[in-house]
Image (tube, rainbow, N blue to C red; front, side):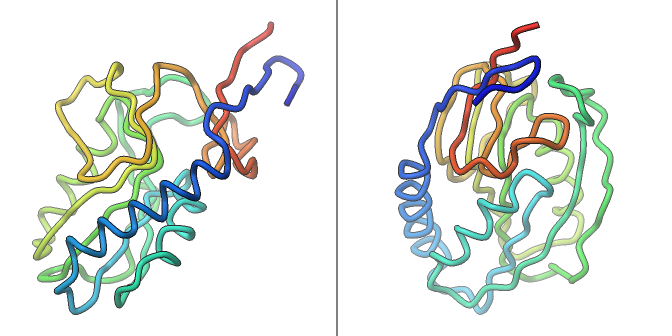
Length: 179
């Protein structure tokens, strides 16, 4: 796919994503097999497609909520300043919570969000990330489940954007800037 100043090369196909989401759901279901109701919290905006596919594969009683945090804006680099733009609507105290993240990069956003959620005293709090870039990590943090480990490349698609574009791609693509 070509745009004015960048090209997108497919990195992870839609078929690979679907297969991995199915496997992640099985592992999550096994972990939370005894839950009364799992609160699945999507970290907006990048996780919205991933969370939709994941919850459809979970054979558990599920409630879905969203939290929006930002440390990127329209940039390709994290500002390391995490802002909460939308908070949860529901209570999570004493409940099992699965935080769903699109990508763990520097770790700043995930670390900040987990610190906030822990103050609300969930019974269990786990993280499922679609993508992980361990080579970029600045804060020692790891998801409980990860879809794919990727190299230090800027990616788009399957909900992940660049300047609010390319979220609708059915695959994960690597962005190559051309000018």
